[in-house]
Amino acid sequence: MFTDMKKKILSAGAALLIACSALSMPVLADQEQYLVLGEDLTDSEREEVLSLLGVKDLAVVNVSYVTNDMEYEALGDYLSSDIIGSRALSSALITSRGRGEGIQVETENITYCTPEMYQNALITAGIEDVDVKVAGPFRISGTAALVGIAAVYEDMTHTSLDRERVDAANEELTTAQDLGQSIGAEEAARLLSLLKEEAARLGNDYSREEILEMMDQYCQEHSLTLTEEQKQTILDLIERLSSLDIDVNSLVEQAGDLYRDLVENVSIGDKEITVDKGFFAGLLEKIASFFDYLAGLLR
Image (tube, rainbow, N blue to C red):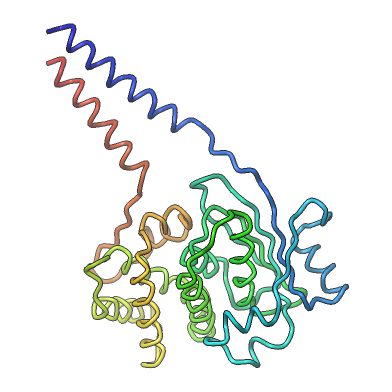
């Protein structure tokens, strides 16, 4: 009897050691870099962009180009031609990261799209674990940068992104940009992130009415005013995002600082906002259960 119990303890202990060693193993990124340049940059504009992106030697990065036609194809349903323009200028440097390290974004000369807006849109598109730096040769909106980033990511990972998700990401970014001009970029990113997280958490229980109620409460408590048209645009977007089955854990993993900040600092009435912390929280619970199991055997 004691021998059997000893075997159980040793087997369970081995499993624990394997789990703990997995936690301590570094997740290595190959740090491969991909550069996407606006095709219509002049020589001087390209030099400025490369300087802002920190690229000194084109021979060590994978270079591709985004065209104005690509911008119209991706954004024509959401932006007017006077906003898209006739020149492709948005450029970005994308660096791979280790699995689970999430998305980090920096911007240079980008006027309306904040790093948080990019993070959210990249997650929606299905992009994971990259460092992204977006730059313009002078101050530009930056909305079109997502077009090139999505194309480059497919080359990096040798996969094809879901077209519906990429299109929804373009809509999300343009909606966030437009909303930001009305209520401020930070508030726009925070509001859309909150509603997106709530939609992901609700899953099959998604309710347009509940999202509207949360939106109204947030606006009231943060002294924001939205038109009925803006509300309907946001509701349509969140409903579309909810249909993509975006995992709430993915939001935390890929843009952790943004969503942790929401959990810690955003309050809406007496509604509790919670985010599942994902794998590591679950693993810690399993480790605690393991020690309870050991104690039970010894008793």
